[in-house]
Structures are given as C-alpha cells and as structure tokens.
Amino acid sequence: MVEVRLSAVRVDLQSNTPVLLLQETGGTGRTLPIFVGAPEATAIAFALQGVEPPRPMTHDLMRDIVIALGATVQRVVITELRSATYFAEVSLERASERVTVSSRPSDAVALAVRVGCGIYVADDLMDEEAIVLEIYDDEADAMNPDELVGQFRKFLEDLKPEDFGRGS
Figure 1 (tube, rainbow, N blue to C red):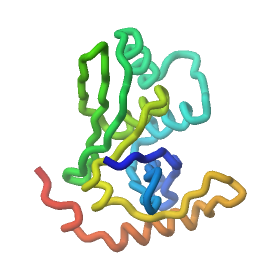
Figure 2 (figure 1 turned 30 degrees about the vertical axis):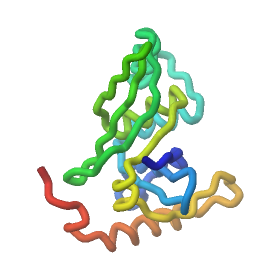
Figure 3 (figure 1 turned 60 degrees about the vertical axis):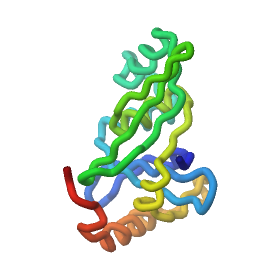
C-alpha cells in the first residue's frame, strides 16, 4: 500500500465536477485523482476548514457512532478501480477485533479527515492510475488552477478505453 495525503479538493472547470487529489507522501509524488459528488466534496472541505455545522453531517455521525461503540478508525484504503468506479475500505478496530467495511472513496476520505487516520492506495492501483502533478502547499507558490486542470485534461485526453479494463 502507498500512503497518501489529501493534497487538494478542486473543481474541474470543464465538467464542473469536484476532484480529490490524493498525493503519495513519499516517492515521486504521484497523485491519484478521484472525481466525487458535490455534497461529498463539500463535506470534506468543511472538515478540512474546521467548519462546524449546526447539526452533524453524515460523516460526523459516522465518526460519532464509531467513537460511541468504542472503536477507532485505523485507516482507509482506496482498493481498486472497476468499471470506472473506485472502491475503498475503512478498517476499524475495537478491543482486539478488527473489521473492514466497504465504502465509497469520498465517504472513506471524509471520515479519515474527521478522525485523523491514514489514507492509503493499493500499490497496483497507484501504479496504474496515478499521475504526476505539481501540487504546492504554499498558496504563494500554488499552481494556477487552470494549469492544474490543463494537466489533468491532458491526462484524460491520453486515456484509451482499454485503460479501464472490462466492466463486471
């Protein structure tokens, strides 16, 4: 598994679709882009910015249930891409019992941001789907959003249908 960090939540200007950019913490800095829905992107952005909604959002509820049951979220893993859909797992631990739950990547990341656990990507998935983007933490040095989207568009233009494999 490759450890990643959520480096950005951006919006693709052409499609007006939010995209999560998961950048490996070591190595060459490869980035796995995952398109997500607007509500999920908002939930992740709220957690990153420390916004406290007047009532718990779904991912806050998930965190609170895990805590109330005496469990901890150990990590989330983006496991595979099947039929143009990413899959993830949330690993939980309670006492000495470990449980893994299937999840959408956006929900897994939203939960990970709230509980502060590690985010990982399966090695083969990172090898096959990651791209190299220049992403900066310092806003003064940040890449122009149009540049970032341009790089991502170039990546998409080079994709072939066989890159996605056969659906199930």
